[in-house]
Image 1 (cartoon, helix red, strand yellow):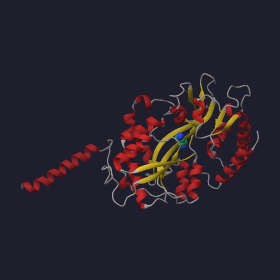
Image 2: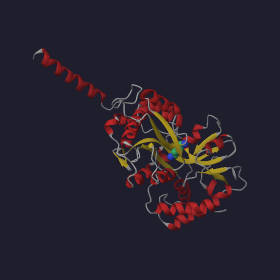
Image 3: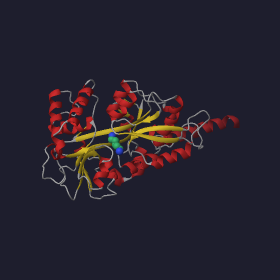
Image 4: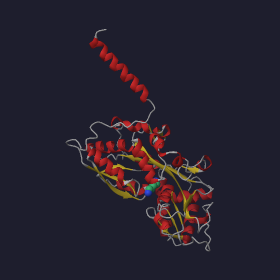
Length: 370
Ligand code: N2P
């Protein structure tokens, strides 16, 4: 073979070997034209992320801006229903949103999500296998799993005995120290799920009689509640204004630093498990979508995925990030529930027409005097 024919063949062999070596390993690929600190001409230089409160390390936004020149600003919601209503109402301007599993299904059905251009998201390969094929979005056609976690009870361990049953909320003892100093999530599906699970019913039930029973229980629980809260309940525990709260695991773990007395548990009857996802609304412009895909690809870098979970104390769907997170994090049972706990957890699912029934009953709960 002549020299000029050998070279391309050699290059091909090197390329094939490199490709083979890279198989199954963590990658940190960059989508086209990323990394020069400047958005390309005609591209947007600012996008809005519509997210749950305190759900991203601000450092991640700064790092992304430094790398791409794109500023990510945040707007916050407190529940899936608030996010859904906002999009259903025709809100524009959001490039990224973070719905939970069951809400992804609803949004897909209602045409509220844009399909991802996976060519712009090569770091998708860093996701763990199980998160490449979630039932509500097989193949990550619309969304990328962001964090996952559980819903249970946080409490001050030196003042309250470990709550082993949801009875602490649904059959509250007026003499208990937490009576009047407890909160429940201001979240229709989560609060109904807690009551339905306590009753031994399916948290996705569409049986009116079961829902009525759950409603009565939620009203009864109000006598022990200081209020409903999904945004500051962990701070109210940390300051010891409250002693017990229904909430999300990572939010409690986040404030252990401020008050080491805070503990988290999932009652014996079970709890909720959820996966939050980062997606692009169909109302995003092509330029916003391109910037949003850059951001999603950035989040999927192993080190960025690790930063996200380290800051949030939520479990990572990113296998490459988990390699960095290390054993201590991965073996924390409050973050990664052990198999016996996992077997008692339920995913929320869309309930179709019944969403309106849940909402009506929830409005009645909120308006009721216990
Ligand atoms: C973060 C809230 C977690 C979202 N503050 C629960 N789906």
